[in-house]
Length: 505
Image: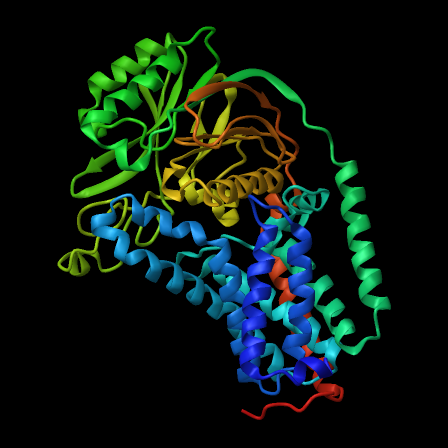
């Protein structure tokens, strides 16, 4: 740590940004979780070497900005769909999104440095404050928990801990293992306790994963339809009928499954005027229920909706998306900003889409009850946990054409897999351009269609597991424990002696 403290502050900032960018390699599509671990271990000595709380906060902001800029690089893609209107916003969107989300981490670094205590105590405090900051990031101002630390474990047995402690709990455990290891590295001593914690955590995760019941299969077959409509052509009248025709062709293919799922906004007409389109769907389905996405209007409000057509072709279920994407599906103060030509990317007037009433269950015939999710609603574990009752499976329809062809669609898929593990439920997802997939209650993909390919897959629906600990209790136990540990750590730290000068500001 002495070497780090000798660095110019500007060099420390550059190093923090580079560490953050390195840490994002743990996310899909790379999945190099070791890169995230290394980044978290090495940022701790940099934090501990900070002479003031403000410098610690700036380093935390720099680290988070590098992380989010790399992780959310896909966010420029929606602005390229209509480049004449929106391309100018792309660099601002990435900079403000990465820098804005980084403020949560900056506050955590600043607050942790303000506490007195030994290096190890401060490292633990940093893990706790950053864990609480991640809670805030997932809830404040509608929340945006994308690229959470726990996401890096989705391809490992460690991910099964999601069924116990959820994503915020697993993220906190990751930080509580890596930051003390970084403090030990800074001191070049004291590795025993952090090493024991790391080994014990890994051992428990592997044993727990091995004890989880295997995923079983039902007798139900679900057809996931993927038309592969590029976003810049999706609503073009010259192409809309082509993409609709693909879905009809895939729907009519023999043999017929037990349920057919189309993606988000799959029907290029408003629901009130879609009668002929729905008749065509019912005819092609030949008595098989169909789920699809469509837009609908109710007075002056418009909704991003999911419709269930039963065996007779009659509409038996409706779900309106309730967790909308700010500046994507609606614009805060939309009427005012609309005067300056600023509209939501997925809507063209005023405030954009309206929010539905909230999570609900959908009767899906012989398959049981579905918990419907539209697009990035699958990113929010609290929304899935907020269902009024337990579903038999989770049903996600999405249009990931907005996310481009690089990291966005794969990160979205990874988070859907996390929701399946947390709930112990199978999850089926139909994505316009991919990746459409059937996911079992352990988060494993049992069948899928690759990104950028038109087609369909007939996948066996896995059976649900028993309710998980996380599905029963949600985030509250982890939040209460983190607050308890934070208060206890603060008390312990202030009783001890500080090994570094404390910024009085």
